[in-house]
Each structure stands twice: as C-alpha cells, then as structure tokens.
Image (cartoon, rainbow, N blue to C red; front, side, top):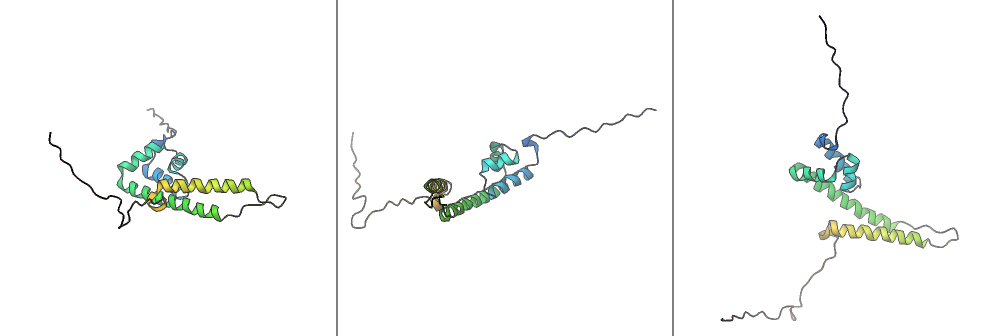
Length: 149
C-alpha cells in the first residue's frame, strides 16, 4: 500500500485588507494616539486609508474608538503647540539669536494652530459672534409687502 505524502503549504503573504480587522484597527488607533495622522497610521499598519474609513463607517464600536483616538490626536497636537511655543530657540555661535530657527518654530506653531482650527473648530477655531447692540439692533424692521398681480 502506498501512502501519499502531504506537503504543507507555505503561508502566503496576506493582503493588507485580509488581515483581522480588529488587529489592524487597533494598530491604526494606537498610531493615531501616538501622534500619527489617520493616513500615516493606516500606512504603518499596512492598510489603505479608504479601507479603514469603510470599516469605521460599518462598525459602530470602531466608529466610537476612532472618534476617541481622533480626540486624543487633537489634544496631542494642542500640546505640541504649547511645547513648540515654550521651547527655547538656540543661539548662533556668535551669541545672536538664530532667527531662522525662530521662523521655523513660528511656522510649526501656526501650522498646528490652523490644523486645530479645522479639526476642532468649536474648541480651537476663531469665534465669530454676530450680534447687535440692544439700542442699535442689526435688523431695524422687517416688512412684508404683498403685491397683487
């Protein structure tokens, strides 16, 4: 009697979308909490950003976790603004301020402030309040005119 030998197949590399969603999602969320954008965190986890966003839209639990990770990322960016603002800018060898470094810090702070104003406008955006003085209201009088044809 002859026996067949069974060959074990070598494991094929998995495609980015075929891995366990929970594991990949956890990697993306961890990356976001550590300061990476969602796009970069997806790249690091080996998944396309659009696929991850599709998963987020399909899974309510993942949607909540993503929202929390996004809030953590926003707070991290706000802390970066404070750290950059408080950082001491070095001096040149001749004892003068390094104005190129000052401008770099200014650009970094301004970029992060702009990003915060777009990601969390209620918290970090400019508040524009339109209101009138009680003695001089914005709208004096509204009249309704009915025209007969």
